[in-house]
Image (cartoon, rainbow, N blue to C red; front, side, top):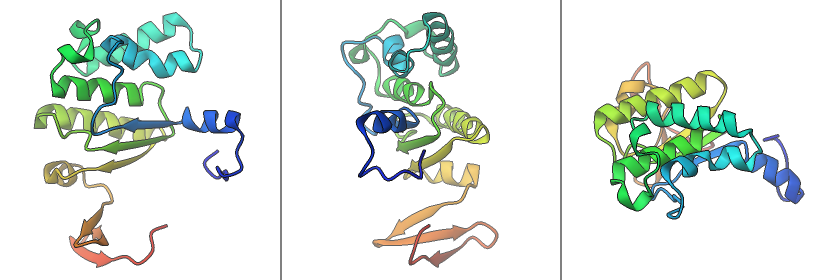
Length: 172
């Protein structure tokens, strides 16, 4: 699937590829005319999942991120942190094979941020590759996963065993 050449992929193949990628945007990208529930349910509806499965999974995930009571609210009635949690829930609901997250904890307090990072770790253990862009050093230090950094425009890799930085010329 991910070893495909997307420049020659058909529309159908691209659709299948997109269904296996979750994205958490820094600016949320929620659909303002849909409730929190419907924003999170969208990937499951697009993939044709049965309504009972959608209801069960969405309600469970909204409860887990602490927003079960606000599931009928429109995004404009939610705080930035609540919108961020809805965006994260939408990105992970279908258990994508790849998750790209741009500042996923940027609008959250540390407690909720660590909880959501725990969710990302659970997804990773079940086979999801996760790429997170963050400026939050607490997240980086707390979880200790491999880390690439941009320092003065150069890509560097942290070596966890020595905590030293090594310049990388190529990233594979």
